[in-house]
Length: 86
Image (tube, rainbow, N blue to C red; front, top):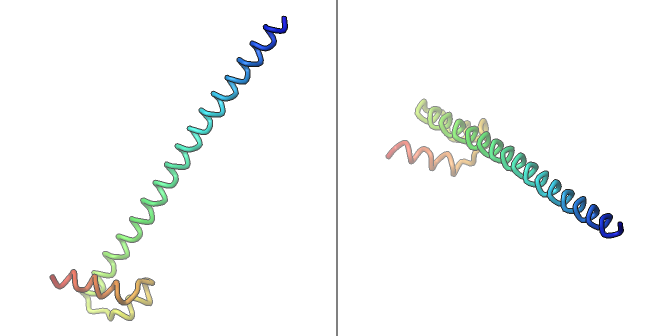
C-alpha cells in the first residue's frame, strides 16, 4: 500500500513538472511573439519617419524644422540628406 501511494505521488509530481514545463513553453512563445510584434511596429514606425524625412528634404524643408517635428537629430537628418544626394 505504501509503495502504491509513493507511486501515485511520483506520478503526480511528474505530471506537475510536465504541466509546468508545457505552460512555461506556451508563455515563452506568447511573450516572444509579442516582442516580435512590438519590434516590427517600432521598425515600421522608424521606416515611415525616415521616408517622411526624405520627402520633406526633397521638398526643401529645413533640417532644423524636420528635427523638431520628428525628434531625429540634425546629424541623422544630414546623413539621410546625403543619401538622397547620391
